[in-house]
Image: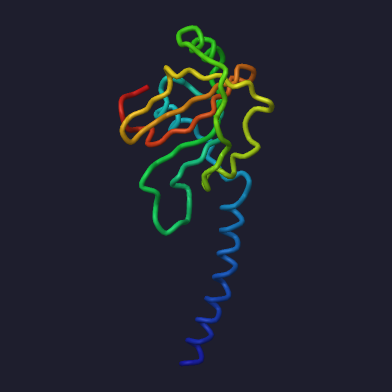
Length: 158
């Protein structure tokens, strides 16, 4: 009886490293991002319908403690004509993101997005408040928006 228990424990321990290795490979894969657009359309209603997206969340992890703050970061493609509509109704300046993807959960986004973007930004579309913020940068050539938002579902709608 004792020998069977030890064999069962040994087999379980042998399976554990294999399961862990597979999980690490899938979690660390370069394509470790979300592609659904609905959560972004709810978070950023000013952008309208989105046609494509690659984004990550600060809650996408296997850490023991979940992040108390929700941060969404990534890229999305706007519907045709949407950026022209936004630039006609808001003041834009030539300005790109101040930093790269520096947070641990954003690493898979490095190298993604449009090639040689020419970012523009409208401070009118940004949101800043107590416990929430949204920053949006747009590339005219690709109709792509880069976003980084802290608690995007909090505060008044954009």
